Image 1 (spheres, chains in turn red, orange):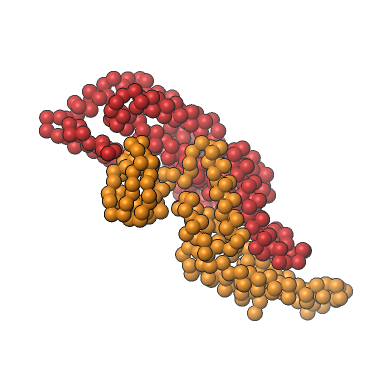
Image 2: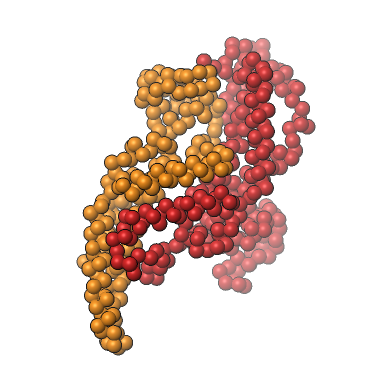
Amino acid sequence: MGSTNNDDQPRFSFGSMALTEEPGRGPLAIDSHLSHLDPDQLGGQLNETLDKLRTVAVNEYFCPEILPFETETIQAMSSEVKQQTELVEEEEDESVDALSFESQLKRMEIDRINYLLRHYYRMRIKKIEGSVLFIFKDLNTFELLSKHEQNFATGYMDLVEEHFKKSFLSMLPKKVQVLDKDGNVDHATGPNLHKFVFCKVKNSVGSYAVGEEAGDETLDLNQGDILCIRYKSIQQLLMKGDVDLI
Amino acid sequence: MHGRRGAELLEELRKTKWLPPYSESGIRQIAAEIKELLEPFLEIITAHRASLQNDPRYISGVVVFYRSVQRNKRCALAYLMNRLRRIVAFRWLFGQAAPARLDQNLSGAERQFLLKYNALLGEYCDAVGLDLTADQSPPRDLYVEVRVIADCGDILTEAGPVALKPGTAHFLKRTDVEHLIRQGSLQHIL
């Protein structure tokens, strides 16, 4: 039950792509399975979208603040995945051997792409949850969220406020009940823009001011350079797409 | 000393890995202390308004009392917020089984929060079209070999229902059993 191992097929570990060959059967067996898959069909455009998704997901993971929601990339990738899933399911329905090699490969790929998508959404949700109060104070950040994320953020904010009120603030006299400044410290703390990040320069920018004040320090940024630098210094470049976080 | 109870509550949180029982009394004590501190503060402001301009005794009194109030408030809110974060993390790890495991350590308000958070997260996942709590690490294999540790009843797979009895080993699709592996009811055999 659920076995992928017929006696006459080599067994694969998809993670490491190691092929164990049985005597008399070599790569030829795989070739015959794959021969009818046309390389040209396997979408140059799909690869581009996938690369973009990977870059976007990695950038979001390492960035201390919330980046603008990448609607086009996500939508393009999601619809591709949906199409592909439907195709695979159709094929599985038609053929008797539902666990064929191609079907598994395709399913694995779908799983991996879904993982990237989930990772992207998850990262953003974690960031939203981490700084709800700040999001509602600073309208720019709120605009960067997708519509669904905005609904989620509003809902979460309401939940947290309600919980605070019920558990504690209702016990206090009215004047102290507000959630705002607390001495010199704001309740709503924003992201730490001074966190150090690794980044790679995609497009040469030449001399760029990276110091705290204007005109402090300049660095020569050429394509392919890898830097470990305070996020604030490269924030603008990241938004423009000249650097990527790694 | 002002703010001692607040510090104690936070120490309690710091020492526990997951969630200690909710300290209703601790929170009430902090609220009571805040009310206590507000009395001299308000008295100074109303009765001694004039002296506030020049007399350092009254000025420092105002500052000390109000700062203590703020510190207490901050400690209490930090306690609550931190617990909320841990509850949310627990939910992500254990899925819908979370409430059962946490139940005795939660306050009533926290239970309600968890229920509503579940609903909110479910709504978002539906809107997005993907279950976000699945696949929290990159998937390696399509099928996984697992040994059953705790009885999970039957799960429905493509090939029909599979009974997961303790001590048995199965070779199943990762997506079907991943949440059980995370909860610890199944052990992934590498």
